[in-house]
Length: 165
Image 1 (tube, rainbow, N blue to C red):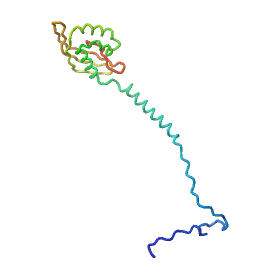
Image 2 (tube, rainbow, N blue to C red):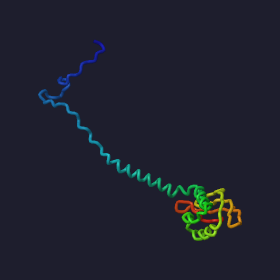
Image 3 (cartoon, rainbow, N blue to C red):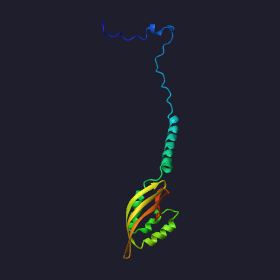
Image 4 (cartoon, rainbow, N blue to C red):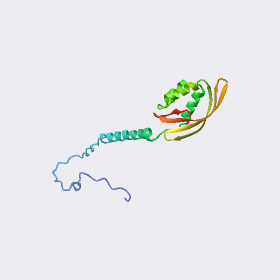
């Protein structure tokens, strides 16, 4: 009958066992044992080392090469504290090189009231200049303020380093 598949082979037929003596014991077919699995430990250590090195490289980039961020938020924070008369909270925002001088100047200025506005900001490397305008009132006198403040990138943040630049 055309189109019907041939019958399955007879595995016991001697034609399939050529070269074997007829009285040779026939062993039942056993599948080969599974191949030994490769240990995952081989790639775990290199993968962990690679991840560690990538983390160190990323952290090093941001720590050493990324440089200072935008000084505007730090300048805004400084002006808000000065306008609110919170001069005692500024000590942590002062650069270490001029801290004593700046504390003395801020103590003198704390006798009056400020109404300052943030102007143009220019930054170059680890220093920035912030233009400040507004008024300073002490007693019955009022003075116009139009000057630049100097900021310096120190210990991972912008700090006030000069009141009159």
